[in-house]
Length: 288
Ligand SMILES: [Zn+2]
Image 1 (tube, rainbow, N blue to C red):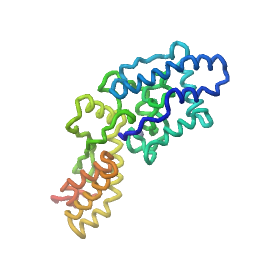
Image 2: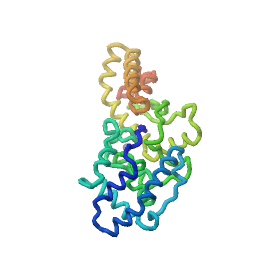
Image 3: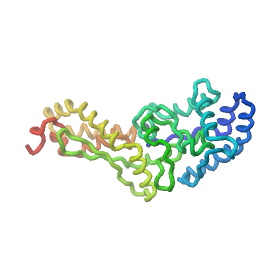
């Protein structure tokens, strides 16, 4: 999970901009009448999210009984997400925030949309609130669907409010099979309380990260096999280990908890892999 800075656009500016070109007088008046509610709710949201308490915010199918969830959904779809919508520049700014356009939820997929952290159908008051709009890849957006946290433990991480990259928490282990495989898991750092650990595990599960990372790692193992095999033949297992350690260090300097960092760390610490586990044939692996 990648930390992102909270967007600089306020809820007030975003909502006002999105509704600025509405011509239907009745709709415009009703939307204008809920502006203060939207602004106050956004402040409550930021305070709650900062304390991992979004589960305490109640769902509703209207805002103030005046504007329906479908109408708020239209404000987002037609006036913020749609090309040439009056709030489209805000959408563009939010969606372009992640480095290398990587989805902050999985750290791998390409950003494709803005995910409503609290779904807009159940929480229409946050349909265009920037703090609730998180850049996301298609897979993560689908995987999360309209799930809603009901306790401190069962939400997913929020890239604007949670920062878990201060510790190494993503680990991998080499499965001694032919071909070798790599399995990913979470190592609980000292300093994580039970709730944070449960949330990270939930995040890992909801977005299928173990499976996603294992798939990419399998491809990476295939890509480096020829080079590792040549290095092993010419310089031996210690040279293989040193090379993989250098690769792990370089990746860790870029991103502490990427699947690539965890993969290379697992490979360099596996004597089995470094001394022949990279081979495709069971006949060639160590011990035979
Ligand atoms: Zn993703």
